Length: 342
Ligand code: KG4
Ligand code: ZN
Image (tube, rainbow, N blue to C red):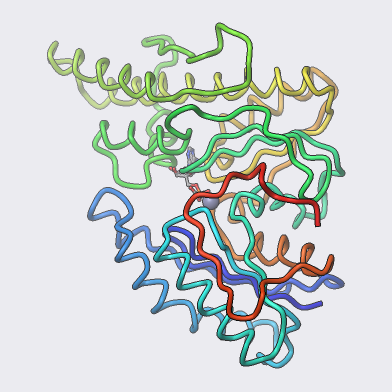
């Protein structure tokens, strides 16, 4: 079954072709980051308009790359949520329109289920069951994954997501949006011993996260250095380092707990923040210690992409799921534990 996957939930237009027999045939991405950077964050209306501009050319591009015509498609999968409603509607309407014209099934899929199963696109992929740390700009969750659609939420952020915290810390440090990669780069030059930030919610049992206190702590540290006339380039790097260490340490502590609590030996790490090198190194070491293994999507499938949507869509379409004709879905908020086994 050849499935076209469409991702338009936020600020990247992602399109891919997944064949259930041959694997990934092609994928393409257009990132709107440069357009939103000017405003310091995603402007929803601009995002929707840009998806409208980019989506059809990208679909043509992946078809050309795979040497296929629209008529060769067997089904279409699109991100139905969670995300920005206007942005989601661009993908949903295009998917439903094309599916109607081609007379093929179409299915709305959950964006976070896409991230969760993105490592399945790799040759070296995890078998079920596994624990998963989902760390993106909008979500921080620990999930027990027993199979497709068989998920239990073990813990999640009670306030800011890890990626959001990175983006806010970046803003405070005068770095451009999206801040995660920039904070990580600045942190490399930071002195790990100079400042120590708190590891929120690690002093009590449980697998929930909280990152908003860390944000306040970062701001206070920057203001203090500024007042003392010490906020030079090195001090900024030291703040970035202390911040990154605190987030990474917190995530690692909770992953360790999740593995202990569930007895699972495989850990999937996905979502934008899973691109963070220090996080990967620390989790790698942690897994080695307990005879467990960590799995990640390849670099470009850590952040938003069409391939993960095509993959999840294909699995669910194969199991017989599809939207009713014309019933396009765009769901801004959609809890992942409401997903079903197909
Ligand atoms: O999954 P994603 O592309 O979009 C959402 O669904 O939210 O994640 C984007 C988030 C942003 O907050 C970005 O700052 C963060 O992932 N991010 C990183 C790194 N690369 C991306 N955070 C820390 N270190 C990185 N290397
Ligand atoms: Zn995402």
